[in-house]
Structures are given as C-alpha cells and as structure tokens.
Length: 473
Image 1 (cartoon, one colour):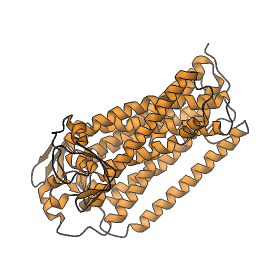
Image 2 (cartoon, helix red, strand yellow):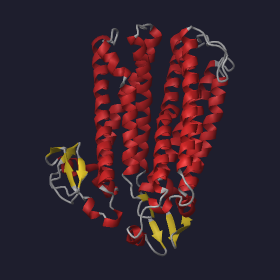
Image 3 (cartoon, one colour):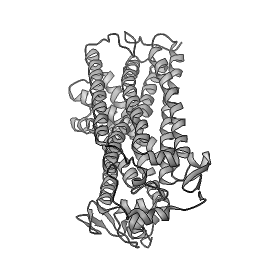
Image 4 (cartoon, one colour):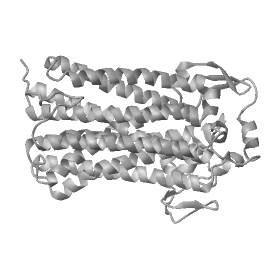
C-alpha cells in the first residue's frame, strides 16, 4: 500500500495533457531501451551459464570425466569475459538512472535505491568468487574449488532478484508514505516483496535458464553440424539442452499463471497486451494485428479466447483501455508494440517448447546418438530464438507500464532530465558498448582459436594449461 499524506496521482493525470512532452524524453527513453536491451542479454550468463559450468564441474569430479572437466574450465573463461562485459554495461545503467531520470531518484530514491543497494552487495560477492574460482584451477583441491564456485551462482541469482524487485516495485509500488509527493517513510519488506515481485522474479529466473541453456546448446550443435561428433561436443550439447528442456515447460506454465496475475494486479498493462480498446466480456484473443484509431486491424481473432484464459469463462470481464483516464492512456503505437511483443514472446516460447519435445523424443528413441541435421539446425538457432523471447518479454514489462515510471505515482515525463542535450550522451553510451562488444568478441574468438588448436596459452583470467582429470578418492 502507498500512504498519501497530501495530493495523489489524480493531480498528475490532470496536468499530463497541459503541456507537450519534454524535449529530452525521446533520447532518454531510446538510450534506456538500448542499454537495458544490451545488458539484459548478459544477465542469463551470470545467473544460469555459471550453473551449467558447475554441473559440468560436478559431473567431472563425481565421475572422473575429463571431457566434462574441460567444458567446466573453458566455460569458466567465457563466464569471466561475459562478467566483465556485464560489469561495464551494468555500471553505465547505474549512472543512467541519475543522469536520465533525476525525477525518479529525487522523489523515490529512498525506496527505489534499496534493492539496488542490495544488488551492489551481490555484485561484489559475485566478482570476488568469480576471481577465486578462476584463479583456483589447479591451485585448490578439486572439491574445495568446486564449492568456491557455488557462491558465483547464488550471487548472480541474488543480484537478479534485487533488480527485479526494483522493477516490479515500479509496476506495483507500495511500502512508502508520501507527503507533498515525497517519500517520508519506507517499509523495506513491502518494497522488496511487492505484489508483482514473485511472479516477475520466477519469470526472469526461468528465462535466464532458458536463454543460457539453449544458447550454449546452439554453439555445440553448430560444431556438430561442422562434423565434430566427439564426446566433448556431445556432452556440450546434451548438458545445456537437458537444462533448457526442463526450464521451458516450467516457463510456459508460469507464463500462464503470470498472465492472470497481470490481469488482476496490472489491468492497464493487460489491456495493452490484449490491445483491447473497450471494457467487455467474451473478449477474443487476437493474434498479431495493430491498434489503429482505437480498433485492432490485421489480427487473427480467436472467439472468447482472452476471457477464457483470464478467468476460465467466456463471461470474464476484461477492463479495456477505455478504463484508463484519457490523459494517462498509452497511444495506439505503444499498445501495438506491447501487444506484438507479447505475441512474439509467447510464440518463441512455444517454439522452444517444441524443440524440447523433439529432444525428449530423440532421447527416448536413440539417446540422441546420431542427431539429424535438421535437429541440429533447429538447436543451433534456438539461442537466438530464446534471446528474442527474452527481449520481447522486457518490452512488455517496460513499455506496458507507460506513461508511468512508477505506476500511479510518477509519470515518465516528470522523471526525465529536462536540461542539456541527451543525444550526445546516447552516442557516447553506444560508443562504449560497441567498444566493449568488440573487445568481448575478440577475446572469445581468441579463446576459440586456442581451443581449436588443442591447448590454451596464458590468459589474465585462467590457468596456462587445461586441468587434468580428477577422480574422487
């Protein structure tokens, strides 16, 4: 709950149409979309790729498996490179919160800053244990080295949950007492564990495992398409593909549950997802289509579909865009973006579910001893499909909140920087990200060349030689 000592969101809605959008709103939103869209792709590799690394490490120690140990050691190097890139992109995002959105930090920094402070603690813990794990190859005893890697996974999860807490609080704010529009008291528990936290957190964590698993599996599928059918590539394919095939049906199930939670808790976002102009019952599910002049065009209608999925009854009443005050109603173009992004997220999710089913069938029939080239081709592109699904989901979350930065409390136009020119800042951020990306590609390609040659040279983030197979005493 949000306690208002004076004034409320109604006064903000009343003045929304009184003035045009600030000149800096467009570059601020474009830069935030670009940097967040870049950074969000790296999150699964801090959360779930390190988990895959630990599975390979455990398998190596438990069964004396040299190929699994080689995978774990090489994946740890990749994880170190991606962690460095994520550190840079995450730092830029942190500065952007103050530079682009001073209204948010000034008015709600006392609440919004709490989960980010916690995320900072997890970030430093992750950095410390990444260093210990990487440096510990052949320097720590095998099982002690293994246990030093588990905090990397746990810290990545903790940091992700902290950021999700901040984002979900913006969607369903609570735990603050306002006086004259400013925070005078906070309830930390209600800020962190707001009404949207649990379903957004589960959705993001499962998405991380889906993206990391199918991306890694795709790399080894591509290798097998080039004729590398050795045991090393087989384990590199099977291990992440198994994790992804477990995660994707859970994600589909959670998505169904989450859609009804959004229907109950975030009706304005749900109206945008369904591109529903008017409050109604017997609402059809529209696949595709765009909203033009208050009507959905070019879509495929499934009678009663939206009402059935929302409340298990055709008579379920869904609040449409007409239930939103006109001054705070998102324009048709933003509604169309949210609606299409949701369709892409769902469609790509079911495509990955189909691949998981295909994998289960092949495993049941032949333990995937000789996978078909079509199966390998599908797996090779599955990582790109998973990333597309992830990005689409974040578009739904972020654009679906508009025109609010903090729903009901702070309009995006009131949060943005109003002085100076933000376009050069956007160009600078894009240059930094391009440089970091080029450096990451160079480092990963250098690693790939060393591995193709069958040996590693000294690197600043790993041992000089490959680890020897270790058996359990």
